[in-house]
Each structure stands twice: as structure tokens, then as C-alpha cells.
Length: 70
Image 1: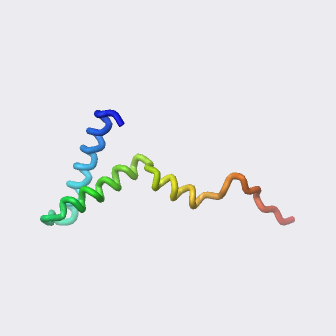
Image 2: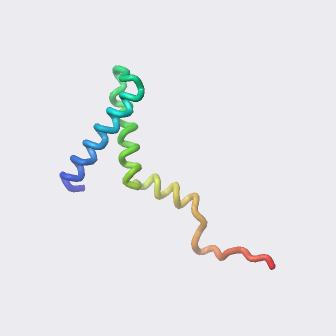
Image 3: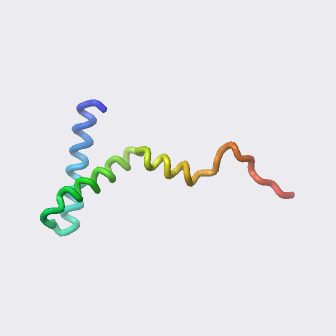
């Protein structure tokens, strides 16, 4: 990941964590929790491995022929 892309990712995480914190009523002492949740959201937007794996688990294997019962 380039330095610019890394800085962009961190800024998006900051912004998302701040939004989550505000929506939760600005509680004190939970900054780490909001940061981790924001990381999941931002990285999920990029289509990380977890999303691909989940989608492939739910998909129909391309090698299986369609069933046909006349």
C-alpha cells in the first residue's frame, strides 16, 4: 500500500470512528472500540478477504451443471 493510500485509509478510519462515537453519545473511554469498528467498516468497503470468502461460501459452484428433470 502506498503512503498516500495508507494516509487516506487512516483518515477514513478517523472520520468513521468519530461518526460512530458521536452517534453513540460521545462516551468516554471507548475510543479503541470505536477505532476497531471503524477499521472493520473501512476495510470492508475495500472488499477485503472476509467479504470475498463470505461471498464465495454463499455462491453456487460454477463447475456444477444445472439440474434438469424433464
